[in-house]
Image (cartoon, rainbow, N blue to C red; front, side):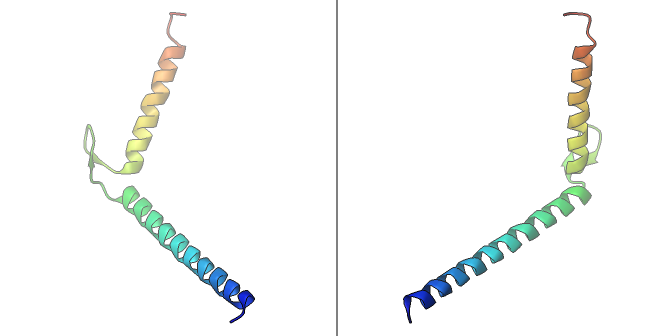
Length: 75
């Protein structure tokens, strides 16, 4: 084999490996997001909640604390 042919083969196999890794990571991310959005496994303060509900609860607490600080009578 010539040098050019072996370089092309190495480049092609590297692209194939990158594509396989990308597709595997994408699949894992999609499965994790679907399970995180639908499965209620995380115990919360009132009931079992999923990950998205916990994020919204944390965002609401953060927003409420900013609102409280901005409207406080102290400078």
